[in-house]
Image (cartoon, rainbow, N blue to C red):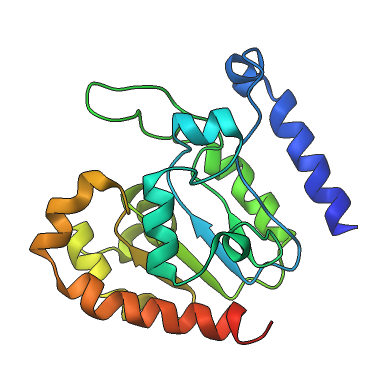
Length: 198
């Protein structure tokens, strides 16, 4: 029954008038969700490569993210292990610098319905500022850096991390504690939730 509900939601997203500009291009919503998923990974919005290939995180950011998580592609793309739910399921287009932000009302409308179908989620990974703002609300710290550094404050439900974009290379060099300390904690949690139970 839950699988049917997930399929119904997928079709509703495609037929929603708010997404017509994307449907008219032949674009499909880019996300994955299986009823047995243990982890929800909330990003911002698919890039153009992900949109065209209909494969979430199909770029350099995704490669780094999988390295941070300590998992291979097979595990990452198994919807009954990890649900990949960006804040918007469609590529938002180019801005002056980088891509446009995800639409503000998209996650509000669709995430609750999808997550209701995923009763086994034990950890939600919040990748970047948009996901953290939406899910942590006033529990966020003053900056993204402070929020990520205080990740233990949000466990066991949420784990905030910086976006793995190559554009964040300077941030990573400036904050070596992230890859030295936070990533090992993240990998340990993921290993416990999905690798060691397989």
